[in-house]
Amino acid sequence: MAQEESVKHTKWQVALGLAAAAAVAVTLVVLAFLWPTVTSSAKSLPIAISGPTAPVQQLKAQLEKASEGVFELTVVESRDAAVSGIKDRSYYGAIVIGQAPEVLEASAAGPAPLQMMNQLAQNLQQQLSLQAAQAAAAGAPATPTVKLVVTDVVPLASTDARGTGLAAASFPMVLGGMIGGILLSLLLSGVWRRLVGVATYAVLVGFLAAAVLGPWFGIVQGNFLLNVAVIALSAFATAVFIVGATALLGRAGVAVGSVITMLIGNPLSSATQPVQFMAEPWGAIGQWFVPGASTTLLRDASYFPESPTLFSWLVLAGWALLGIVLSMIGHFRNQEVVEVAAFEEAGTDSPVLDGTGSRTSEAPAKHLAL
Image (cartoon, rainbow, N blue to C red; front, side, top):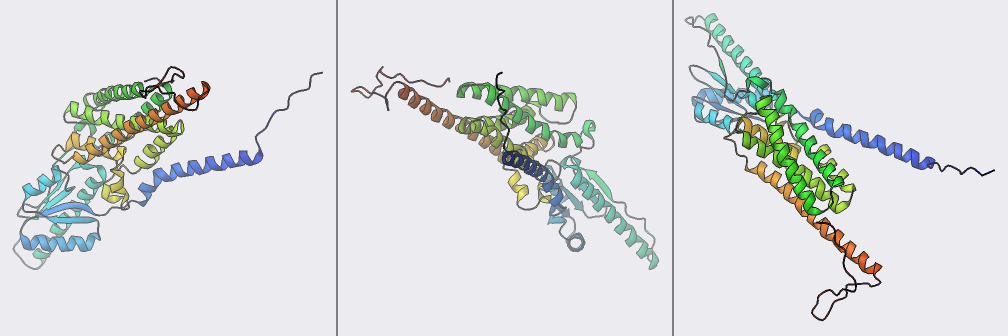
């Protein structure tokens, strides 16, 4: 009777260690996604204030005392200057003091600052009404209560009136770049084939995603080709970085690239809140990663064409260049390893060179597919 082969079981120490490691990994994932939201607070929201000097300084002092750091107030010369600052994203809103007081806001800047500007407008209106009531009680001539005007300088499109689509679009962009990078890293061989594959993938994603977000759903506005460029460069930067990390580190590079993109870059991207709301300096640091730069750039390209975008373009280009460089380094390093293995199989320790320094035919080198 044949003796049954014994089944090798995993050691208890290894099983328990892997279970603990998995639990820690899940905890880190939860922490990475929740920490930026839990630790954020409404603070330092840049808004402009304009009007006659004395009333402006009085209101500025009142707001700074009452808001306790919620607003970062800047005095500007005129209403036009305030509007210009909102359009180039220097400010999230403005207060204009005069015979017809006005609050300027930009719903396209995001739901959180919009809510804060609406609340500020309500408080100012209550203050104006109270002043009129006090004047009437003091026996002053009856005057109608001043009505505060609220103007949306940069409104959202009617097809995304609440801005939820634009905020939600950031995660699919990140995920799309990751999926492309992972699949092409595992399925393609050869540095040039991978790079061409990533470039092709990014261009297709750019056109298709821009068509879905723009003409189809109406979430993004502005120039269609500009939106294509933003989405394509974002997808390329993420995917080629993962491809480069894989070329350099092997399959561990997939994990490294994914962790940097999903667990570091994405939570710090400020897709749903102003950068100023995050704990310093993480909001600013998040703009140096692909998710943060691409989210900001897509919003600017869609609604704020006057805003400066060079920094975001350079960040995306920098990550793309880093991925290409890593791919090249990994390729040439692996090529050297293959050549050394080939010479060892041929029975030599190093390449055999002739008198001119050229390789002889005694030990032909094996090259990786390009």
